Image (cartoon, each protein chain N blue to C red):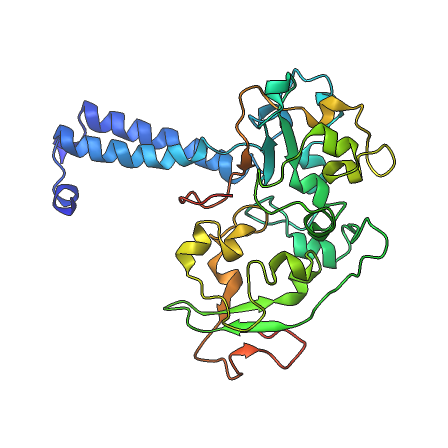
Length: 136
Length: 191
């Protein structure tokens, strides 16, 4: 490898190595989606005929500390760990604790939350998280 | 030398030069992506225009180079934001001012963990005893596990500043640190 680099000749092999290195500079940029820590929820949404839910952490943490949702309201710190459906939300659980029309907009504004592109997969999105084999 | 500048090498240079604007954009102009180009929101959604853009809100806060490009702890302490601590009546709000210094960090500097900035956002039960035992060194962990999204990595790398910011945690120089490893007596954080 290093021998190749110190003795660069017009061999296709060398160009392939450089090409791959150049490609590695570009590729990590493509998965960058959404704002840091945006959450996509689409286990049920599209099956039920509505757009996937985009949950922006940044929008909520301006207004609430983590402890409100992750302690008081019982949201686990893993995407998909809570089984959330519209019935439980209408029952005042999870999002339904605030989204009542009093603290935050009510459930009649479906499209403000169900605002995602078709085909998105459930998960937490960000441009800056380590691209290791982690799960979130 | 002349042989280096053949067609293929020129092609390679063009490819390399083409990558720079992309990196440039990522570093600066794309500080906050608009909702229409974030590849998550559907601009055809009926309520798309009602949603707040990240730039409108986040550009007002102390700036960072990573994550949301916001220093959230500073934004809270300096009064840029005043997020609610509870929504249910009768919830006890606990904030703990206690620094912990960890050694056994390999070649890296020791880690200083400030309870204060964490409990200003989080409840004790978010970490104890679910992720971390309260006892010092009660939960052995490695950087690899953290990078995989466990322990500190459950938040850092997902919602709080990412794990590329080594020295925000590995901040205590072992050769100049005179204190005791573990819980710090002083309520004030030391550098």
